[in-house]
Length: 400
Ligand SMILES: Nc1ncnc2c1ncn2[C@@H]1O[C@H](COP(=O)(O)OP(=O)(O)OP(=O)(O)O)[C@@H](O)[C@H]1O
Ligand code: SF4
Ligand SMILES: [Mg+2]
Image (cartoon, rainbow, N blue to C red; front, top):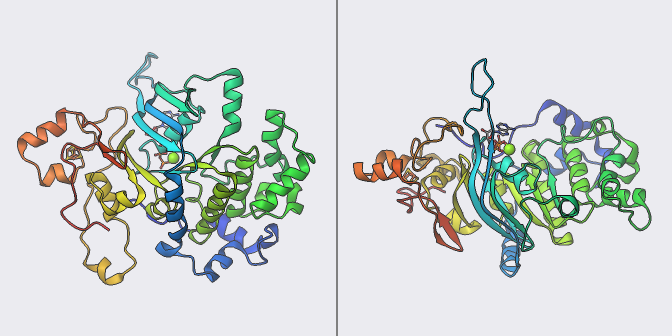
């Protein structure tokens, strides 16, 4: 069985060490990130309050579509094995995904490692050139934007990266890092760049006096705040957050998620939030897209997806999420996903999930299985809930 981790990695050495010593680099309190969070009881599956996003979801229903992605593909060309250099089969990292995001909304993108989440996020932001498909931003086709249009997109569409260690230049001061977008875009904020950068530092919970410090002087959580300050510096409209908390100590994740939510309210941001942690996704998302091998298997409003999952893959993922009640957790059956993710170079025929699908394996007749192996399932459903499965339906057991 391949379980998705549901609460992110445990603290690594540098994070643990940094949080123990770097309290002064934050203005929030003299207590280090981790201790402060533990003190507020934020840990495990209970670390996120669900209240706030519920209210937001109602508002979001009113927002217009700001980003629309249709049949987007990103295939990476590969060389065939052998001495002679010739083209081989491409890696179909993203293979025909469609979704739209409304203004102020958070669309969660979830799935196993290697299913194409980061590639999808980067391609949507034009950090990678799409192989085919269309990307519309504010109603305009920007798929092959260049020149002035691309410059505008760079300002309005931003990214927060997963790795708070690798995404910041270790030789630049925090001030230089956060100021970079202003220099690149040739924008001079009122009061000057330094004052604006210090204001941003304060806003994301960093001490503005630490303007001249280097990234290694900050903890992982604080570094992610630096990345967030850089991403919001130019007041973008859409931010792709690519696993922004999964490299952080579990106890710090809630703080960074809360910061992202506060900034979303304050700056009316729209998020595409990539994660493999279903607890984080459930907390932050208004709608959720479940990806498998470069395709979207199911897309629904958050509550609909968690309470009424119709795709066997979503059901398997949810059945792996630990339940806080130990008695229920003990009695609970799990839907097993056997085997590894197949290669995106040579994905299975028909429904790409058929090689691991528990429904295919245990519930279908021979003729139904033939359909799964030969016919790509069409996306069906309504605006609240779509699913790509010939035999979509509720699970036989309670999954969450
Ligand atoms: N530049 C590249 N060249 C070739 N293959 C790539 C490239 N970038 C990604 N891939 C492949 O594309 C697939 C999707 O990768 P991607 O990083 O988008 O997945 P992911 O869902 O973000 O995974 P993770 O959860 O581990 O971050 C993987 O098989 C990966 O090896
Ligand atoms: S189409 Fe068939 S193989 Fe694919 S998810 Fe549905 S039941 Fe499983
Ligand atoms: Mg990724």
